[in-house]
Amino acid sequence: MVRHKHPNGTVYVYRILENCWDPKKKQSRNKQVCIGKLDPDTGELIPSRRLDESRAAVLDSAVTAVTSVSGPGMVLRKIAEDAGLVNILREAFPDSWQSILSLAWYVASTGNALSHAEAWCGNHETPFGDSLCSQRVSELLERMPEDGRQTFFKLWGRQVCERDFLCYDITSVSSYSEQNEYVRMGYNRDGEKLPQVNLAMVYGQKSHLPVTYRVLPGAIPDVKALSALLETFRKLEFPSLHLVMDRGFYSQDNIDRLVERRHNFTIAVPSRLKWVKDEIDRFRGGMHGPDGFRKVGDETLYVHTRMVPWGKERRRCYVQLYFNALRAAEDYDGFTLELLRYREELEQERPVPEHEEAYRRFFACKRTPRRGLKVSYNTGAIEAYRNDYAGFFAILSTKFKDPLEALRVYREKDAVEKCFDDLKNGLDMKRLRVHASGRMKNRMFIQFVSLILTSQIRRTIREKLPSSKYTPKSLLLELESLTTIHYRGKYKDRLTEATKSQREILEAFGVGVQP
Image 1: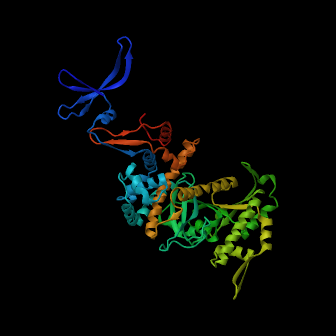
Image 2: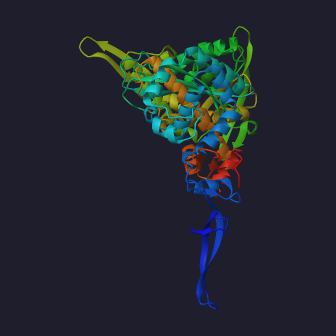
Image 3: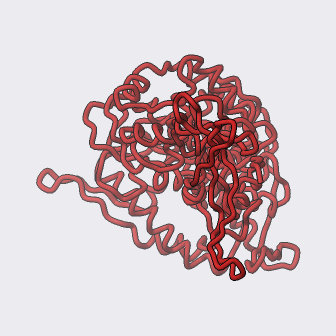
């Protein structure tokens, strides 16, 4: 930069744009542009009015600025507002919703423990607007009220579950805690020999959003957990629902409860049940006729539907039977895994009442004073079952008379398994680190809010960016370089220029950005 003094005494500052050689005059020449003038009293540069604010702020030595990472927050804020999450959190937690949502943003972006949130919240734009130190996070986990969580689930559930199919499943979360009354030994779905809590999750099949969850003691089997969920629905005043569940939740009592409360359901039914085997035996004679032949993609099925009245009210239900010859081999393995699970229940003397029929048919138990309880397999009954019923599976539905429609809806329940995968592998829930049950519930609530955000990101990737290889976390990471410069004083904040990939992401989520 060079300075030129005007005859009136004003000193103007010029920036040299380029230097060049003038061959005619045989001297160096340069092109200059005026960028401002010097204050006669302080000697500081007063930027020219011809400059835009961002360039003027850079040249103004009196201006100080700080930067914050804006990219992830631009997407997360848009999702939270469009989904109604902001308004519902504000109503449920009027004093702490900004902190809760900020921690959910942090977990969705990093998948790290809450104890490391301070640095991330300090340099990212969040609803709270400041860093959240570990002490403040601990205080938040202590004071979040139960009625706040219930208000949230009531409002959120009504909004999401209307006209949707709700997929229901359970996962295990292992823990080393000895002070949490929910942590118990039970069937661990990850194959870990650790005590656990069970996390029951309800997920919208159409909306692709989690609806609600319930924390259960680790020793409660899946079949017993459904009654707790139905009680939760009753307390939250949910409307009549359509639940989609796998066969682990089937029992006579569970179906009776669903029928009594007028909920619709589509559930897989174990083919080992006597009434299901009777249906298979009735179907077997005409099984290979052309009327039952169906092609589902590359899969060949033989199907059969029969309406059966259920319960005292004679509620109309449809039993859908399917036979797949290729599935027969897979059924061998699946049935073997079931037998191993049943044997473990017997050997640990923790029998499940709904499995009594299988215990009687496939096992022999003998107790001696010296060797204690000895459990052995009834190989004859096992082989007979495999030979007669392998390759068959059944679905019971109050809604679908068409067997292929029932099968499609049932198979799409895998969305809840992806939800569990996001929660445990992407959102820091592989291990339960907090000890007290109250803190655990609030910790899981923050994870649940982050799961809503992650689920919506995954859905947008699938619908708007199908050719990309983004995961929710890698998409937010791509936006990390998009920052805002905050000037103190008269100058406006300035967002750095977005790259092509960042613009594509922001457009996919409906976030406007200046060119």
